[in-house]
Length: 161
Image (cartoon, rainbow, N blue to C red; front, side):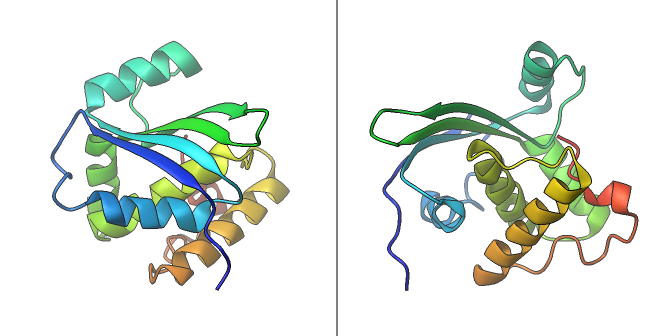
């Protein structure tokens, strides 16, 4: 088994509706699975109003999105710093629409956010395919089914972030 990367993790539930379903140990496991190096991260769960404000103020998109990643880069000692914000309302709505569990969808969004924090992107098609494959592999290692398996439309496969 590969060594785990050093992780300092802060978890904030500004919206606590999923706090019981997503214990800190589970969130840490997901983050750790997606890490490629040492990191100091914050996971923050927010409601739709806060999610919308953050997306509007930082991305000029006036709607709440499922996950936002604020990557601050690495320190001199190669520790990656980032804040990952998950919108509970959007997460719950998407899980219901796709008929998947909240926990599985949360796992996917946490892994997705952590990969963004490390520089992965899905703007170009080849980058999207690489990121999707990496996400699927990480999630499989966590026992989470392929989140893209039931989506056939390539445009719909991309997480709208």
